[in-house]
Image (cartoon, rainbow, N blue to C red; front, side, top):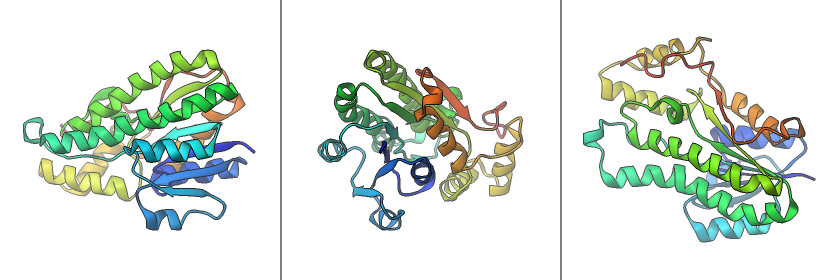
Length: 248
């Protein structure tokens, strides 16, 4: 049976990825910091409560999993919503740590076994913020841009070993996390939540936010044989962003 490991796999995009991989016949391993969310994961999943930035824990879990067919380096946090000159260094480091260092540690420790097996797909969760920038979200945007650089380098290094690497860039994703982001953004900009929501939707050519399931479907495709020569790519699943910040 094929095996997929998803960091931050107990909620949101990660949970949707796990469900999609399970439906595709994979054994699913999920890590997360939220023990309660992990306990609610579907039966049959192998779950571990760890922080994505804890290298020793990440190395242990990935070592237990063995060669992976799919690694979804998905862990991330929104970070602060504030103007550049108002962001505290500690908040900056915390956001960059989870979004960038967490992705690095996942691929670092998965790569040796994948190289030995001569196969695998590494799927990084970046963001459209990693393509366009994101006003009032500097640490998040900076980390997601860096994830794309990490992915392209991983694709170059791991390709000769039969391993592919790609990055998915979600747009605004429906769900509790996005509601929190919109609430903080509304407060920072002196606008209402509905104004922010309408702005996100109108900033796409399809006039719609996406769902976690949309992202998960792309992840399963990228891990499949149908994508056997798709590597080093940045793929937006965002309804086609035409204006990344229409409120500004």
